[in-house]
Image: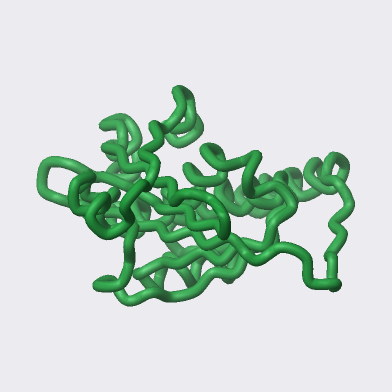
Length: 190
């Protein structure tokens, strides 16, 4: 059933996807997206920081809605750190869609399982694989050229917004703009 569903999605995607054009002349510098998720006993949070030359840094950080966490836990068990590490890539694509369209994007993650899942486009965890699908589909719809790479946890600037530590982020990135996650972004994951 899952293979059939995937093949049906592929056929519908190819019918609507715009042609991809890769500009090999150089063009713009890549945009850097740092993402992170945090799982505490009573809450799951996600965050990200977008860095683009010539613009002020922007960040979001938010509690993952209870309905989403409940769904993740229902599919896998209590531990949802993998899902929390993957979800901000999808959320970032929604928040910064206009900025990311057609750009080269370096996505910095501090968890190898999440990074590898995004590189492969697959995870053995059903809920992680679903989030990977959402994230990669959103990036593809924007014509983004993503590169997923590793950042050590202690160097991941997204750790602060993922833990809702706004004052600490302001000390590290003075002038960073705090964004809210738009209404409806989480609906697909509920």
